[in-house]
Length: 132
Image 1: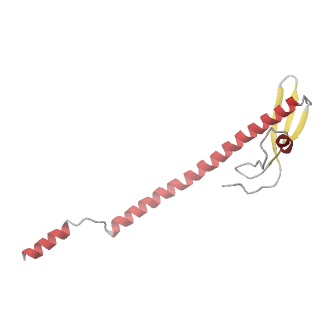
Image 2: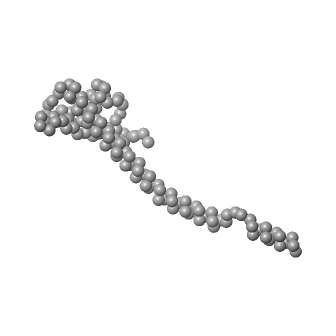
Image 3: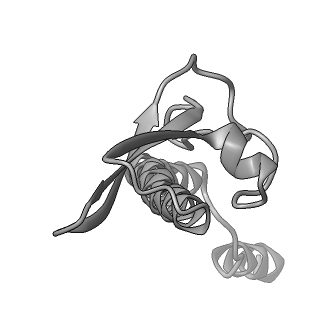
């Protein structure tokens, strides 16, 4: 009889997880993952948009510098990305928007004696796959 009581006490002190406890943990992890995954996707998209904004600013600045260096002060000038790359104002290679994959083709730059230089990036071309 004493042996039976000792065995019963031993079983009460066993440590471990039941199936219900494991399922509860899995459900909690699933809920956390369901909340976290969409927010991470939004952060990635926002970073691509921010990178595109900075790329466009760099391209506009390079086009203005290109025209200033060549003493071209016409009212409106279209500068291609290829011209900027060939003359060393931009690094060679494909320059695409991160968010859409559409390549930058040219920049329209205008000069006004009163207001100075203004440049807008023109996005034309077909979408190409971007690196993840």
